[in-house]
Amino acid sequence: SVALAWRVVGVSFFDDARTVMCDLKIRASYGVTGQQDGFDNYGYLPNYTVSNTGAYYWFDGQWIPVMRPQTYNPDLRWETTKSWNFGFDYGFLNNRISGTVDFYTRRTEDLLATVPVPAGINFNKSMLSNVGNVSSKGVELAINANIIDTADWSWTATFNATWQENKITNLSVVPGTEVADT
Image 1: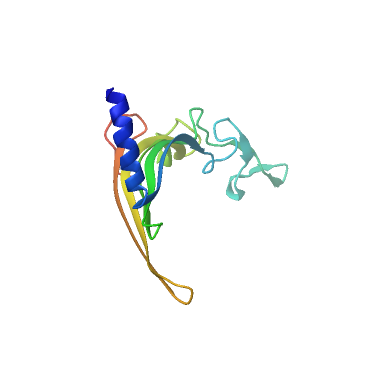
Image 2: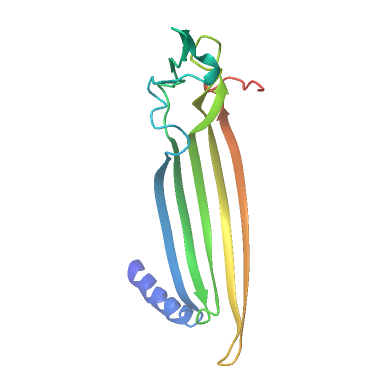
């Protein structure tokens, strides 16, 4: 009875609304992406490389290049971004007025940065590390209007606006500690 009454009212409402609203699509998505660029292929493993020109060894009357260890970080990980999006597309008056509205959130973890390291800890004064997290959220709005649309001439106007908020939630090698100026 209540459901039947709603259906009857709903059908008549949508029949009337169809003359004004011609398009309505609702979208939602979630995803996790990784950022693999930004560090060497083997930056997490101990490797050796040929020393710089000024660091050769004098042996038997000639300068011999030596092998030296490279900087490495065994805890190195890809940056990852987790995001979700909810939005809808709409169209009115035979799509003469149309547009989209999107709400989104992103959280990027394990940001990569080259940071100084204490002497004796590694084989260089700095190394690539995962140092932070960033979150962002926002709303995007777009409105398109076909103001004039004839066989000889057309005039289209578009308006878009975005609001976004970014927040650094961590920016240190050890989460929860203060960040030192470098």
